[in-house]
Image (tube, rainbow over all chains, first blue to last red; front, side, top):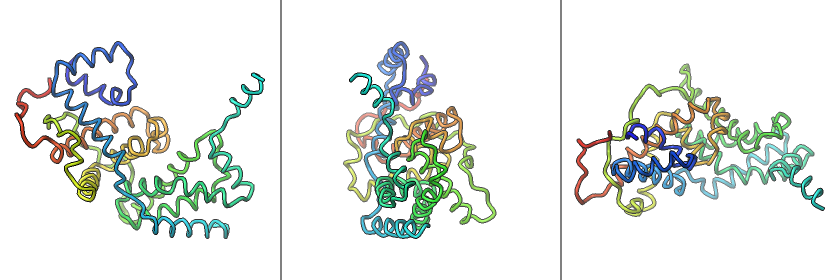
Amino acid sequence: MTCSEFIALLDDLIDNSIALPIRVEIEHHMHECEHCEIVFNTTRKTIEIYRSNEIYDLPPNLRERLHAAIMARCKKGC
Amino acid sequence: MSTIQSIAGENEQHPDLALVERVRAGDVSAYDELVRKYERQIFRIAQHITQNREDAEDVMQDAFLKAYEKLDQFQGNAKFYTWLVRIAVNESLMRLRKRRTGKMVSIDEDLETDEGTVPRDLADWAPNPEQNYNQAELGEILRKTIQGLPQGFRVVFALRDVEGLSTEETAETLGLSVPAVKSRLLRARLQLRERLSRYFKKKTGPAIPQEAGLK
């Protein structure tokens, strides 16, 4: 397997949607290629960091204000 | 007994559908529950697309009001959440069009780039690199980095990886093919990784020779 072929399968590997025979081949490639192992680990970490940190949080006071505005208009029939 | 269980299993529906039915029957408090359940996600998606806090607030209100008005058009075989997200995405794009009057805005723009398809920064990251920054610094880095992505990549990453929609749901929501979503997702992930590397890579230790590169 080449590094380009590895990159093409990277998403499926991260999303755990790869059939066993190809997975074995991929894991063998990562074992041999430090760069691809780094790309895999750091891409997976990228997703994990974005998932676990709310970068656009809705502050509780704003949340309540917007919520009240939506419900007031719905009750009036929008 | 087993027959009863099997019928119950077949008829098992998403809890949102029961809330939708109650709203349709005139119970506004059921809509209150749906708004509380999804307002954070809808606000985040609107922020990812508009990149403007006031616009995101307006989009959030408009999306929920529109969903309430159009609830009769909601088909019970779809998920209420993905239907709501589609409304929010459309409202966000409309908001951008208003801001950039006369200029077409779509999720297809700014994609003429090959940047990030081949990883260049091959340095390993520090263990738990996010811990080297406080919460405010980390938030700034993550916002700045994702805001630098082309919109068509950013929205796919936000829906698929941050909000947890499936590839098929993301495609349906954005009116894209599944292969298009997959292609954008890979490029978005690789570009974000590349850009975050400058903050998260190990500061010391032997560098990996770049000329060795990817084969």
